[in-house]
Structures are given as C-alpha cells and as structure tokens.
Image (cartoon, rainbow, N blue to C red; front, side, top):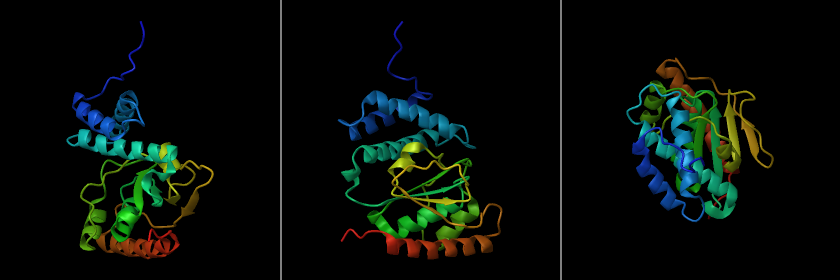
Amino acid sequence: MTASPYPVLPDERLTAGVARLAVRHRGRFSPETVRRLIADSYQRLAANAHVRTHLVVLTERFAAERLDALAHVDDPTSTGGRPRVLFVCSHNAGRSQMAAALLAHRAGDGVIVSSAGTHPSGAVDAHVVQALTEAGVAIDEVFPKPLTDEVVQAADIVITMGCGDACPVFPGHRYLDWPVPDPEGAPIAVVREIRDGLDARITALLDTLPSRS
C-alpha cells in the first residue's frame, strides 16, 4: 500500500491553520509540506507545554515563523532587505524573550526578530513579563519555542545567551554571545536590572544594523 502524502494531524483543529498557511505560501510550498511542518510544530510544542488550551493557536504561529524562515532561505529578498535577528537561550522563558521583545519594540518593522530555546520551558517567566510590561514593551503573544535549523539558517545575526554549543552553526552568519544572567527564579528587582542591561546591549546592536532609509 502506498503511504499517504498527507501526514496525520495530531489535532484536526489544525486543518484550518494548514489551509491559511498553504494560501499564504501558494507557489512556494505545497499543502503537503505545510501540513507536515504544522504536524511537526505541534509535536515539538506539545513536548514542553504545561497547558494545552492554546496549543493549536500557538502551533500555527510557530509553523508560520518556520515557513517564513524557509521562504527567506530560498529567497533572501523575500523580506525586503530587513535584517533578521535570532536570540537563543536555554529555556526561551527569560533572557531571549526579553531581548527579542526589546529589539522588536525599539526597531519596529525594520528588523525581523525571533527567539528560541535549546530546551524550551512551558511558559515565559512571570517576572520577565512584569518587567517588560512596566517598560511599555508588548509581550502578550510570546511563548517558548524550540530551536529549529531553518530559523537559524534564516537569521543574519544569531545571539546566544547561556546555551553553550547547543546552537547549530551555519557558515555566512554573524554569531554573538551575550553573557547575560539568567532571570529564572530571580526577584523582580534583579529581573529589572537584567532588562536594563539587555536594553543597553540592544542599543549598541541597533547601531550596527543596516538602515532601510
């Protein structure tokens, strides 16, 4: 019997997401490829999720990011010359989330920002959310995501924070390592200090990024 080209979805509610992403990438990725990547994204998120209430929605967001990264790898002009910056830490619950949120807040749509973890947690640290909210930085829709090769390949700059050699290295990319303390379990006053230190690093980083003007 010939195997079906359509992988079984772990949750049939994902079907609508497959349809939406297939339309977005029509002519670039087949519906089968989209379906396979959504199924894989669901399994990767489910492996670490503490609460699965929003897992279907998060899966579509995660798969969309991965497909956009693949599209960029295939055609680097697809994002209009905007630099792509990826932040990586171990759990994607603290440092990398703060850095990504701060850069996105400061750069707007001039930079494509993403973050991931080599061993992602189930949720973003509550004090991280508080510290960013106090600074007026939106973090409503962020969630820990596992690191995948296509997201690393698509990045112009990969910034690691405490994840050692777990991040894959691809030629032609700029890699930086920021020695930033881990906010996990730290009191809010310490997390605010970490936030402010990251913001200073973001300021310096922005000075090195190409301008779109």
